[in-house]
Length: 123
Image (cartoon, rainbow, N blue to C red; front, top):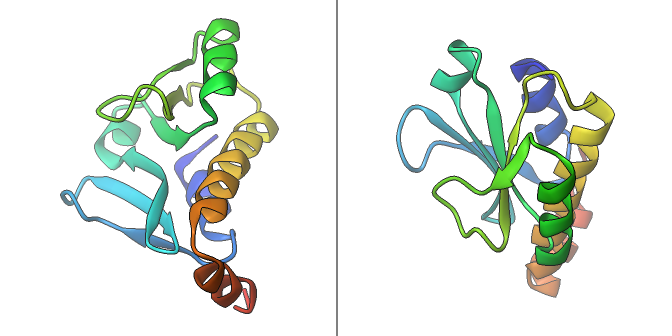
């Protein structure tokens, strides 16, 4: 998956927005003010692209055991976040499923009021 595909797919999610809360390098994608994806832009430039995605703890363990490209979240909670290497070994469809899972987990953690406001948005 290339940066443009990653970026556009994340921002196609209802209510998603981009931020740089840490520095000018770390792209953070949020929904309802909460992160569901983040990635270092300089790592993309070095062709060492990866993305941190939220994940159900049990599923995170299964994915890490099955795929070398999926590791505990770098600089994140190792229980709830995975770092996914986007080196071309994982199909884009699968990476999109991981992004969807992360988005869904974060969306479900939002208050009902914020969820309703996002659902009512026109994308």
